Image (cartoon, rainbow, N blue to C red; front, side, top):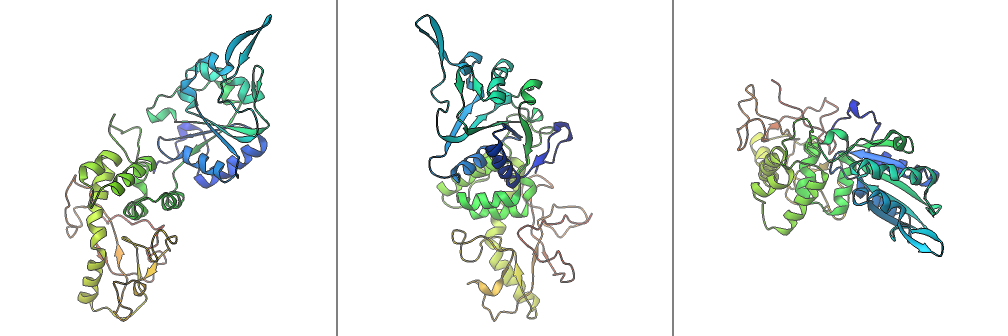
Length: 364
């Protein structure tokens, strides 16, 4: 995932913290500016926040780049001997709600300046924003190689600013609610660094990359297709590096039960507590409950409670010269995962493989 950028000069927050900040913005009616890399889920969080506010709570999505400076004030008409301005029909006039002005930094500087009065005084000319509404603006960062302009300093001083960063735990909750295919959830729990691997400095123009938005696209395509998706389809949605790893993971994902049973038979393990990382399923089904941190092999249908068990640690590590036992898989060198079965380390408190654990790289 993207790391905080010192050049941005903004506090980096998680989705959970953004929910708290939105609640403060709702209470104080101070406009909040949320920046973040492309596809990190800013708009999804806003919609979820508005949805839980109750029936009748408004949600307005406006795109700043669609406005001309004069559009914000409205359209003039003659009323007797004076001219009055008719505000755009989409502007809120009653009730309460959340007004999200998307891509504000992408608008021309003159358009951004036209929002000065709205952000500070909650009005534009004769139009006044209802007291029950509050404003949130969004935009990408200057480093993201998007269509982004520098915000005028007077506009910056009219809002408070944060930068949203992807959180694997928050994304997992969102993915379960959205019906993301379990293969993708399991993969990114193992390779959380790939969930948002967009690197503005090294990004090759016009090539796809992995982010929560494109992961959801891939999930929808996998739902619509039968069987394992092709490498080209995966590559076309989440990019080359993440795509090759996920495509290789799909083979491992389907073979985990047989690999586990083969290990039990060959190792003649003694009875002990067994905790197996759920690569291909969670107990009781994804749609019925949240994934547990770990689960006992005896609770699965594939394994009998009487079968001697021992732990297996799955380590998706990159191939190195010092680890010749790791098979070289298809794709670019050092980019495809390989499966290694390792002995348990009960003395290591970090050993029981949980959903939040990160696999370690092979020693060099």
